[in-house]
Image (cartoon, rainbow, N blue to C red; front, side, top):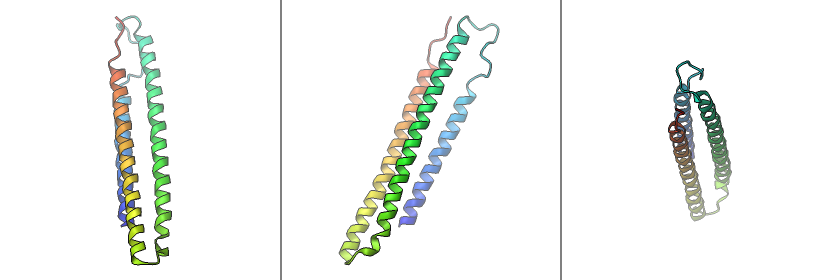
Length: 139
């Protein structure tokens, strides 16, 4: 049971990291490397630099949140592993059953919280991306 829970948490984390990597690659590919092309309206370079600065701030914030989420997942996993190692201390089958149910609930709650945090962070990233993509261009 514990192995499957840990395997599933690993799969969820891996899939989320891969999705975010692909998302960031796609986003970064949208920005041209050289902002000063002839023919662009006056002020375009300044606007590009503003958007680029906001973009860096947004990505930094997303990465900070991701780090906090991963740290929380590891702490919860470590606590659950410690609880699992104490399962053998149960004196009666009823106590073992109660400890097993408590541990299962904590593992499930940790996975639920991690998933919610990832969805919340992804939603915030999409909102920021749309905000940056819809900034008015200078004329």
